[in-house]
Structure formats: C-alpha cells, structure tokens
Length: 409
Image (cartoon, rainbow, N blue to C red; front, side, top):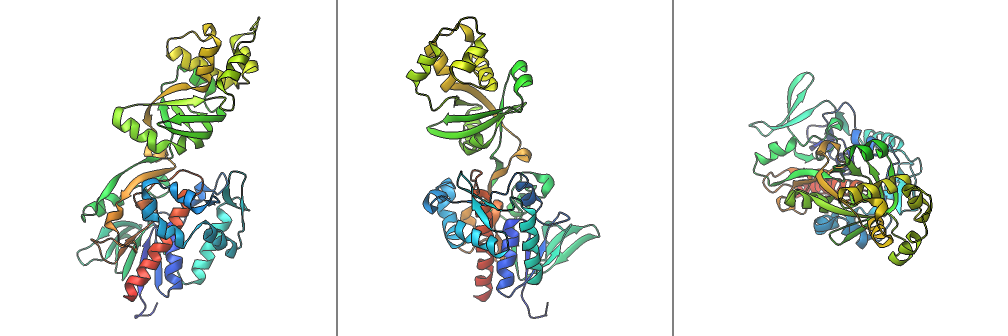
C-alpha cells in the first residue's frame, strides 16, 4: 500500500464483507478485512453443509416480496446485483450453478468450500489483505478502529469502514451481535435482534416426544394467520422446526411475543378434500388397531398418526372414538400450541438490526460519516431458500459501491 492509496477497513469476513472487499479492491482501494475468527466465511461454510443454497430463480418481483416490509429498502441493491448476477459471478469463479426442482439455485459442486476457496484466491490476487483473530470493539478518541487481538489491543486508522459483522445466530461461528452496544452508544437506532428461521417450542407429551423426536412430517401444509405454506417439518425434542416452519417464523414469533402463544394448524393430507377424506375414514375399521386404520385409510405416516393422537388427547378427546368427520378435521387442521421461539443462538438467521432510516442510499450511517454497514446487521429478514445469502451479497456490493462514491465525492 502506498502512502497516498486510500485504505478501507472491512470488518467481517462473511459474504457481505467479502463482497464489499471485492468491489472496493476493483475500485482501486487498499482493503483489509478484519475478523474475530481464525479464518474467513465460517457461517458461510456451515450454510453449505447440506448443499449451498445461493439464491432463487423465481421472478424478481416475487423474489423481492420475500423480504416483506424491507423489500423497498433492499430493492436497489438487489436490482444492481440480482440472482442472475450472482450466478454469473459464481460462474466467473469457476463454480457453475444449477436450478433445483424447487427453483432454488445451488453451485454444481453443492458445497461452499470450493466457492469460498476460489473467492479468497481472487481477493488475494486483487491485493485484499486479511487480519484474523481481530475482534472489533469500537473506536478510540481519535476515531481509530479498536481491536482485541491475541497480541493485545490494536488500533488502526481507515479512510472508510464497512461493518459486516452479521446478526446474532450461530454465535460460535463469529456473529454474536456484540456490535449492537457499540453502535447504540453512538446513537444509531437498532431494532432488537430476534431469532428468525427458527424452530418453536411445543409441550409434547413424553410418549410422543420419545417415540417421534427427529421424525419428519412430509407433504404437509401449515396454516397461520391467513398464511399457508406447503413443505416439511421435523418433530424435535422441544417442539417443531423445518423449512415450512421457517417460512412462517416471523408471523409465529411476533404472535408469541404479543400473546405468549400461537396456534398453528397442520394439514397432514392437504391434497385430499374434506369429502374424500371423510369417505376414506368411513370405511369399516374391523379388527385393525386405530393406528393401522389411519395409516391405511388416510395414508398417514406413523409420526402423522402420532400427531393426530397427540392433538386429540391434548383437546381431551379419545382419538379412537371420534367419527369420520371429526377425524378428518383433526387430520387436516391439527392444532398445536407454540409457546416460544428457539433461542437466537440456534436460529438460522436473525431479525432486527440497524434501522434503514439510519442509512443513506449508499449504505453509509448518517450519524457516522465514513462508516457503512451491510448484510445481516441491517433490519431485514427473509425465509430460507436463497434469500438470506442473496441480500447479504447484494448489500455488501452496494456498501462497497457506496464507499467508492463517497470517497470520490
């Protein structure tokens, strides 16, 4: 780095921070990426353990709607770096992508590690430097960035800073939300961080919990507050989680925050209308056990049969004594009471963060000129399906462009 070259500090080596670093280096800035962890992209690698879902192939208007009330705030960033742009970027790194049957987009390698290695090689070639095991703690009286390192406290001046420290989910991977106190102390408005894409607590009976913990409920429909989601869920020891649950997590979380509980209705055979289901359940039971009768007549899995029995008994009903119409209602409107959200440390992502009112169009904090923010630090949330990573990449790129424009101005 020459004495006249502009130095930009990027704090956070996740997708948002690395994308900001790439844009900045391409714009001629000298960039150092600081991270508290020993290596880059810890949470990114975790996201790729089951197949890295980068983005989604649905039409852009539908895609943007997944961000709910934050969609207008994110639109410019995603328009500038849309799903197709992300796929082209991956291709340029030697990691082509494909669209799965659900419309989700994955790298053909189906892993995060090859993509991250290629990306880090590109950043290294562009002159981006890395400083790991540097935990950011704020600023000193001279405006220098302060870090705690294995060698003790460290301070560095920067012409501009991009904060990309993530939310507060999976804190052991580096994003612990500790930055909220630092920025709040500077007068920045921050919505409290809350679990998103998370599981929920249900007071299962010991019999149901012991027998069906870890079992999937497949091909179901979940109904809550006018929203219906098709997909899968998994019975856990403490409650229920899974893709269909995550899609409703914002609504469920807020309902529990308001009233202490939320009643979720599960359709175990959503493709059967009521009349057809009643007809099937009207067949003679003969000498079959109740479980076998439900399994054969309604084609329910053992865990689905168990759920019907669990819900009936929770309502004070004897499942085997119910008539066909009552059974049909239980099967396609099984009501379970959710009493709490999983802790944020176990959530896939977090909601809350820096209010968009605190940012200008270039993602700079109005109260802290020269300081920009991106990724999950911002107050948005989205379901799983590629939306989380897409917004992190896009806002990281937008913050990088914002820094370059501000410096040039």
